Image 1: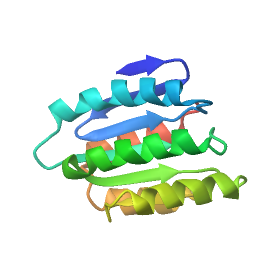
Image 2: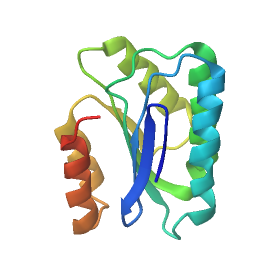
Image 3: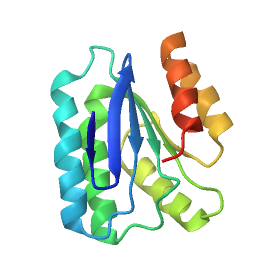
Image 4: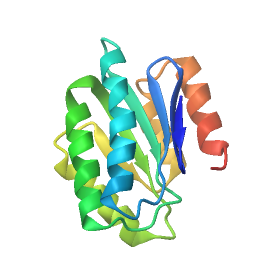
Length: 143
């Protein structure tokens, strides 16, 4: 588990990484998050991580932060099977930003969602029953 400031990520079941993404005001905050998150690369399972990232508390990132997050996503491409980014449907601009980052990160298994039910259906296709239970619990928790 890693938690600092307002970000939190953890692997609680199988290969599912749960992330609560914070609002990051500057590149320094993004670098701190990316450095901590990158430590997971050395423990990647053979069949790849499945990433569940909750961006619902985030508003639009500054360009330098968005660019740094995109590079982090690209770094994880070889060691992940799928990555789901959940955004708040009440904030469509943030959703568009995350959709752009997901699409340009170069992995077809990374998608942005604004509907948790659609996200869960998509991820459940590849998750174990234990991971599915954890996914539902994580999405039901408040940040």
